[in-house]
Image (cartoon, rainbow, N blue to C red; front, side, top):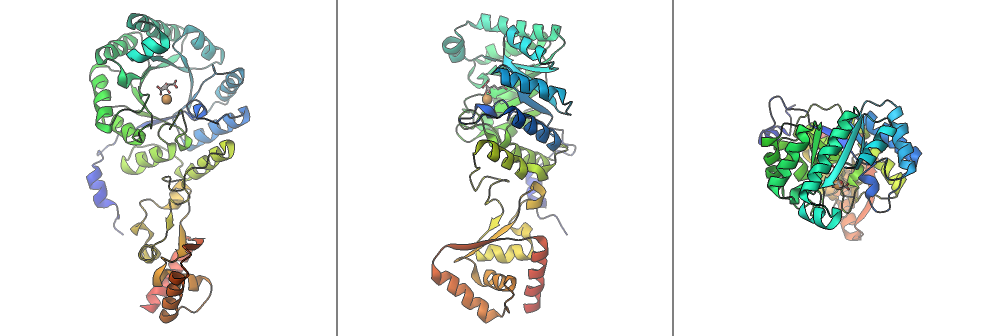
Amino acid sequence: MEDPNYHANVYNAYAKNPKKIRVLDSTLREGEQHPGVSFTNKQRIQIAWMLDYFGVDQIEISPIVSGDHKEATKTIIQQGLRADIVSHGRALKEDVDVSLSCDASWCAAYLGVSDIHLRDKLRITRAQAMERAVSTVEYAKSHGLKIRFTVEDGSRAEPKFLLDMCRAISDAGVDRISLPDTVGILRPIGMYNFVKKVRNEIDVPLDAHVHNDIGFALANAFAACDAGVDQIHTTIDGIGERTGIPPLAEVAVALTYLYKSPNDFRLDMLLDLSRLIEDYTSITPYDSKPIVGSSAYKHKAGTHLAAILRNPAAYEPIPPRAVGNRRRIVFGELAGKTGAAYLMSLLGLDDNEEQAKDVALGLKKLRMGDLIELPLDDGMEKRMARTSRKRG
Ligand code: HCA
Ligand code: CU
């Protein structure tokens, strides 16, 4: 059967040979900066294993936060996972030393480069910042580390200084540069322009690290890809400082289905990953959250029910099983005749048309909103399709 998303995908205009966009997951660093989140070391190790098995390219953790975090970083590095373990710290030699003492092969260093960060947080001049950045990169490189440098608050930095900084660390041998919209102030075209400005001048692989303060994080991450970054930062369920960063589930699904990026993700783990974080943090994703939310695959209105019973793709962009979720149907006052007939068939009642109408009317008259929710698996759909064909 023809792909129901075919025309939409023409609008999406993905490339003939799409390039791979990598994922760095920062649940263990940015995620732990979310209010109320603090993992145990066992949980940190479990999360790292799960992320690795899922298929992210890099896993970020900060050993400088506490002795505990340092132990976790060391242990995770010792696991020999496929993903790179990126040891995150400030742009200071002492933090690079902590990464070295964890036996890291990748480190990340961040330094505020906007005037407000330089003046009111770091209390250093632009020249001092430049010196600090370059010497940190040189120090890491001379000790055999790969280093990603984050020009923190880069979206609010003076553009010429930002470029000078990127050029200087690039000359010092930096391996990647993270371009962050630290306070989530850009709109998608703004992110595109920000990345493009750096991309045009600097020949170093770029990361996008974007915050969701105004709700644009996911869109901005992909605008950054369009402008030339090849790695997006995520966390499971998007947890992070304040309103967080792009969620792994949405990023992985969009990369796979909307960008056709050749990643090797086990997308059917996405619900499990979200549940893992829910267990470890007691933060429940809101019900309409894409992909992993409890309503993401529920169908309610009678007309929708009627359609999905014949072909779920009518109201589902991606099959729920593909992302580890499950289709559910909601019966209540909006169920309609088809919904009522289906409910009756599930209960083993004879589904004649008149009775179905009565039940539908009864449900409507009850005025009690939703009454029951039922999982709907593929076998049940087929059964329904057969019954509805029988009835004509
Ligand atoms: C922070 C700031 C940061 C760094 C991002 C990065 C940001 O350290 O909390 O290292 O890529 O949002 O700028 O998260
Ligand atoms: Cu951040």
